[in-house]
Image 1: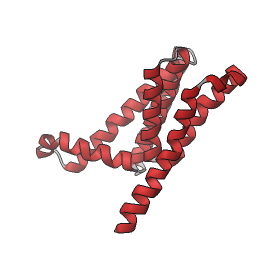
Image 2: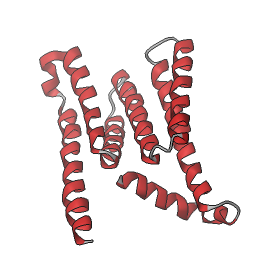
Image 3: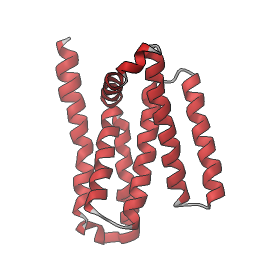
Length: 173
């Protein structure tokens, strides 16, 4: 989970002064609480774009509650980050769907890369825009070059994980 580890290391460096007051474990737990909150926010924002507000808030409450269950059930903190990245990806895609911008496509791709580097199975998120666009546009999807570049990031992340991290770092140790 390179994304989780990288963010955790960065967080611990940024919050070093706070670690004089709280244990390092408590400070690290705060990071994942922040990510859980961000994931709940992103899920509700995405749901508001799809269903009436009252349903979106109810579903967001269920989503947020599930993160609490994960946390107290000792699930890996990387799962909370993975869920948050998935919610952010869906929100960003829905925004991009309303109006394409190059910046929006780049942000979507960066979320996909971070998510796939955290857990490679998250690369399956890339199927969402592909299927949605194919359903809505049919053969016209061939003109959408950005989607091909977007999809290529998943095998690149896989090669980075397998070749660099698993092949290089793990094999060396």
